[in-house]
Length: 112
Image 1: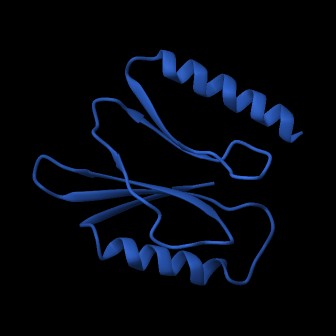
Image 2: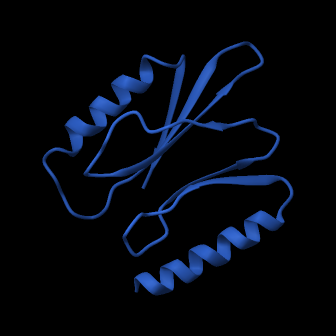
């Protein structure tokens, strides 16, 4: 099943790269089967990936930032939480969000 998903993900990312209007930030899984996490956005938006400030063991995430024309610093946080339940998920996510909110004016959170 994981192999089929990887093939599908690779197909989607190759086709997205052919579209001139879109870019992709992708963080591949290290030492695991599967595709990792990605943020797909319009190329006209100048997103800058930032290093992950918090080590999380219960979810994967990617963070990018942009500065709006009015100077507002906006961060985008994409989170993937695997199906296994962990009691430390809420505290890890709270720690990450708290850290990011100190560094931006607006935080957009998306996830699966």
